[in-house]
Image 1: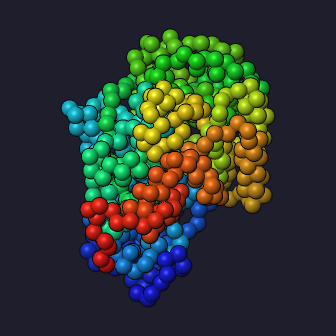
Image 2: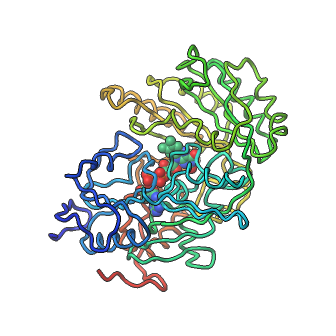
Image 3: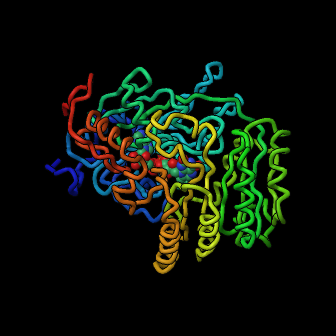
Length: 482
Ligand SMILES: Cc1cc2nc3c(=O)[nH]c(=O)nc-3n(C[C@H](O)[C@H](O)[C@H](O)COP(=O)(O)OP(=O)(O)OC[C@H]3O[C@@H](n4cnc5c(N)ncnc54)[C@H](O)[C@@H]3O)c2cc1C
């Protein structure tokens, strides 16, 4: 292995890591291209080595090897981050994909989830016992990245963010040590893990609190014609004023996806949808969402009792792996008439029928937790918006440029109505100041301080990076000895 400088290109001359028991994949392996592909097909990075870890020891071994050889490190959970930080050029990808086991203790209402699990793994395992925790709304999203950034989903208003349900984590540090973070073990690290992303270590196992949910919930979208957008959003805003925490809502604007449950003549027609999930008895949910379903003239109403597991997977096919994606996002100060006007004006200007916009309704338990309870910073807003440009890989650069411009112009139009931003919705061209926006001054400074303790050399920087303020040895952590 030749010398290298971290931050500069480094080529690997070995495909062996002593003590590593998982699979190592290099550029000359047949499945290299498959292994380096992430959800966003526009990400095209070429790592020197991909280490598919079989357990925590493999993760620690790979970190120590990478440090000893001054290799760039990227960490792959579910591979869903739109900005593709799960992959690096050159260096090594520490890939947790084989580590997807979930163990449930129904008596204690706890799930132990390996760091490479997807939300489908968690939902299926926990729903066996009629339990769940707040997860993402697409079941092929990774638990790792989503949980470390905050975790918003259908259950958050009732049960809090994913980070609010994190009880403990097993972490491989930048020095290759295995430690535990919880309210009593490395509490500063535990605080930072709950919103600060992959900056502080590699989480090989999450321990989540679970709650009774379903297994049948009342859920699904109601679609109205795009021309009704302003009226629907104004109605929606009023409807939300006194909805209980059990009701989760997401607005989707774009074209109607060609799902089997929707009649073909409606496919790709521009429309606004309000999708709901009532995490309580179905009969209460039916009473509650009646007003929504009876508003105006819906094009199609798919609200029905459904299994929570099926609901969690219901939009999976609308955002498949391999399409090209570009996102712009912001938290909104309010769903004012002005914001509604901007949304109605810009949402349907995308030319790709695959592009869409999603607005999450927050509040409830998210807003009731103290703002400094975790490192997630958007608890004081009720709505956020993510503008999702999407097109096919075979489409040419003009389509990419048009869709990208649409997303940027839409975000620009919201200037003046923007609060912070959810860190997990930032794309690769969102710079350090937007990462700062995701946290605000106080949280960012506290994270930078903790980063200096646990990763003073910024080994974990293929992420939405927190810069360490100044290096300080972590209490109880051995310095790295390669
Ligand atoms: C289709 C889709 C739907 C989404 N829906 C939601 C949603 O409903 N709610 C929501 O909150 N977010 C949602 N997101 C955003 C999601 O939270 C982020 O994309 C998140 O990064 C995905 O996690 P991942 O493990 O798949 O990411 P990856 O791309 O694998 O990882 C992203 C980064 O996270 C870090 N990381 C990942 N795993 C670990 C680990 N085990 N230990 C340490 N660091 C790790 C690394 O820094 C890595 O660079 C969605 C994204 C997509 C693409």
